[in-house]
Image 1 (tube, rainbow, N blue to C red):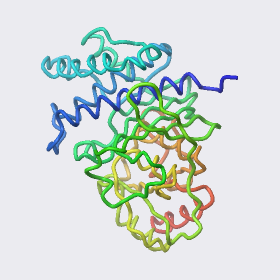
Image 2 (image 1 turned 180 degrees about the vertical axis):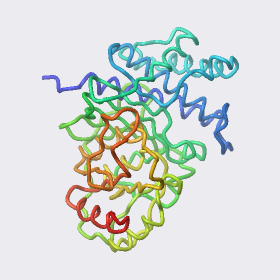
Image 3 (image 1 turned 135 degrees about the vertical axis):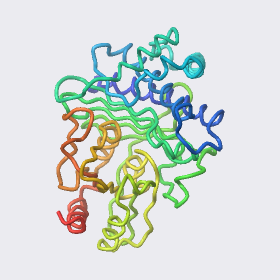
Amino acid sequence: MTSLYAKELEVAQLAVQRAARLTKRVFHEKAKGTVSKDDKSPVTIGDFGAQALIIAALQHHFPADEIVAEEEAAQLRTDAPLREQIWDLVSTTQLDDVAAEGFLGGRIPGADAMLDLIDRGNSPGGARGRIWAIDPIDGTKGFLRGGQYAVCLALMVDGDVKVGVLGCPNLPVDDAAPLTADIGANQTDEGRGVLFSAVVGQGATSRPLGTGALAEGKKISMKPITEMSSATFCESVESGHSNQSDSAQIAQKLNITNPSVRMDSQAKYGSIARGAGDIYLRLPTSKTYQEKIWDHAAGDLIVREAGGQVTDTTGSRLDFSRGRTLAANKGVVAAPAAVHGQVLKVVQEVLGL
């Protein structure tokens, strides 16, 4: 018997794996020593290329589905050298990916078709129908420094996340590998590259990122916290993304003695889902900022399917039905279900909620 969303899961996993290979190639060929995201940066090249590859697979298999994605192709339509550079990467990646090609299909025939595919990510989102959310490179600065970043893809049906996939090229393959203070940089050696995935009601898995057919996956689950003092929590590297001083106060009130582990991207969700970390806090730094749905949809489902709970700072579930942003939510608190309430209570004390 075929499980619900089996085809969507396989397409999503292979598409993310293929896009992750493109991003790794961009890093090794173009990004070393780069520290900024200007209009022709490696991040720009990787973003556009990865988004095109993922949308090509989705368009081929699910042509009626809508797509919410971060990038649009207007810049490429007026910049021929940049367009050709990206098309060269996309076409070469397609040619190299023989093992997945027979299943994924959706080969992009030329640069103009690539631009049209990129622009298919312009859905307004919402509460009705099937909508995919894509972040082709989540964690811009992590990618540039050889640290943590993620290729992210999620399917929402009537505003509820049903399938989530994260490709994390620089996380250790070993699910038991502890988080280290240097995990945010210089993590491009061998033994790294993980594909996390989840389907609602079916649990979460991890598998090594490969180069063709999918590697065998194994179930993952969050680690029970028996002593809060020994817990590890993850937060963003950038202080503009999360209030780090509030996080320090929360850790102190919870008697957590381990230093926080700072890394970019939804790799944080994957890390706590498999028990390498325990708690993920993203605390508001602005009253007006709204999180983008593509930055959280896949990770939210993967953590919940691994035995965790994910809410905002008020205790509400993340609401992916409001459009392209989490307009109804402020911040993120993710933790094992058994202690989420305890963590949330302290978060609210420190934030004065």
